[in-house]
Length: 255
Image 1: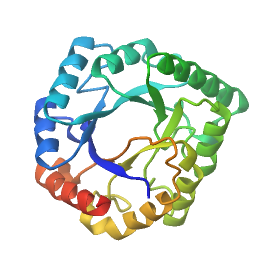
Image 2: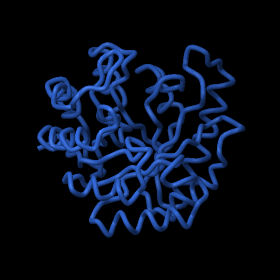
Image 3: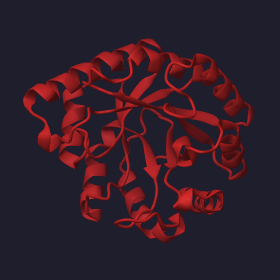
Image 4: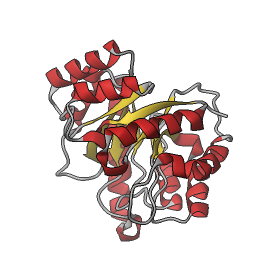
C-alpha cells in the first residue's frame, strides 16, 4: 500500500498560535502540518510565512501543504499571486485550492470552462515555482460528487494538478469509497476525521471504517514516489486532549 505520513491541518485549531500548533503536532508524533491561508499564514504575508515555515522545520516537521482559499474561476477570489508568494516563503510543496464556489448540480458549461481554464493557469504558475496544486474535495464546489471530481481532473488534464480526498458526509460509505477509487490517479493528500451526521467523534471510534478507506488506497500507483499525508482535521470540541488521542489513533491506523 502507498505510505501516508501522519499530519495535521492547522485550521483544526484556529484559536491557537502557530507556535502552539507546532508544539502539539511534534509532541503527538506527527510529521507534517498543512498551514491554513486564512488565519495562521495569511495570503500575501510573506514575512509570516517565512517565520512559520522556519519554526515548523526547526521542530523537525514538514510543511505538508499550504491550505489556501483560492477559488478557481472566481473573479473575487484572493489573487493567486499572493497565494503563490506565501507558499514560496513557507516552502510548501503544494497549494490547496478550491474548484469554484458552486456545486456541480448548479454549474453550466460556461462555469465549468471558467474553472477549468483558471485551474490550468494556476497549475502552470505553480509548476514554474516548483510546486503543485491540489483541489479540496468539498461540497458546493465542482468536487462535490465522485463523478464531478473525476470529470474536473480529466478536463483540467494538467500534470501539476492533484486532488485531496475526505469522507464527505453527504455521501454513503459505498459512494465515498467509489469516489476515492475514481480519483486515485490524481490523489495528493487525505483529510482525516470521524463524524456522524452532525457531531465530531473520536477517531478511534472510526478506525474500522478508515481501514476500509485504506483498502481502497491499496490500489494507488506509487511509481512517482509522491509524498502523501493523512492530515487530521476537525477534532472533537477543538480539544488538544482529543487531538492527542486522535493522533495516537492515526498512528495506529497508518502503522
